[in-house]
Image (cartoon, rainbow, N blue to C red; front, side, top):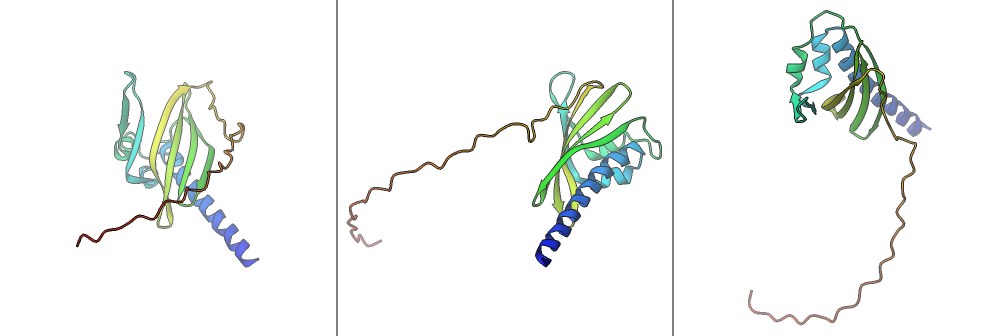
Length: 165
């Protein structure tokens, strides 16, 4: 009973840590709280998307944080669409809705010490009426059947000659 209770407490702790980090990213950005926003990331986190010319673009956390206006609330709504974790890694999908478009973020997190941090962010700007497409839990996955392999053939004993090495 004690084991089950401790596992449940640990799971709740992991969940709250992940959600805190993702909310620091969302709320820090929305409210112009640069330190809250930057604190959600490891300093060298990678952020990537596709630019207008079709090439991969990216920026540092510091560069993105420099676009925030400290203390100024942005006209946007945010939500965590989904999240999951296993061991020390997690993934979260968020949606930020602006008056004319949306940004969908796919965040990869790692547990570093006792804290969850975003290590990569891949994002898309989509139309405001566009929805996120997901197949999580809705598609069937092929289950591979064990393949029986024939027993290895017995080899003739190898004759070893001592050549002095």
